[in-house]
Image (cartoon, rainbow, N blue to C red):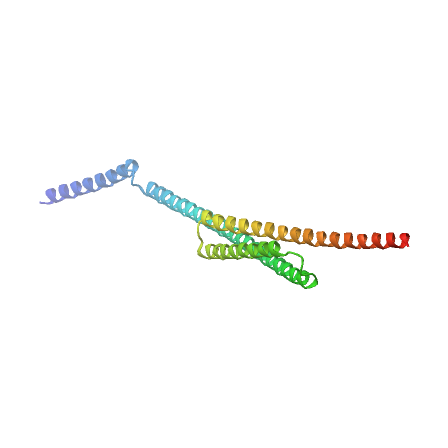
Amino acid sequence: MKKYLSLLIVLVMVFTLSGVSFVKAQSAVDPTTDSIVSAEKERATDAKSALEKQKEQRDGELKNLKEKADNLKEVKLKARMNISRSLANRAANLLNIAERIEKRIGKIEVADSTIDTTNAKSLVVKAKESIALAQANIEKVKTAITNGDTLEILKTNITAAKDALKQAHTYLSQAVQDLKAKVGDKKDEVKSEKEVKTNGTDSENKTQ
């Protein structure tokens, strides 16, 4: 009995030693060893960090692009508003000139009712109509800016306003030239009459 017990103990020890040796051998060739696992974890951590950095970089680039787009949008908005104000000021100035010409026509008519101001009056009326058309298009420009309409719509309204203002300026210039011509002709006529009277008087004096 003792003999069998001793043999059993020996076999147990052999199996135990064999198991330890097998585990050590597996550890030497198995890719899932502690060092490899640690390296894989480290690589995974590095990859995660790299991805996070890339994401931060992309987020930063997108933020910069958005800021640039916002700045550009603001610059364009200011430029368009400046155009609108400039057109409105031109319309106001032309309207002021038209009113001054009307006052001038009134004074001329009071001073000398024989001067024909019909054409000048007609030109001023046309000018004021063109100014009103320009102002209507300027309001469309303001609305287009507020609504953020397309550049094409904005350009169409701006062009219409500019054309109307240009036409109004032409009409007013023609009215002024017409008045100058009519008043100048009248002055020449008066001057001629004076010369005739003066010459006639001189002739009578000489005859006497």
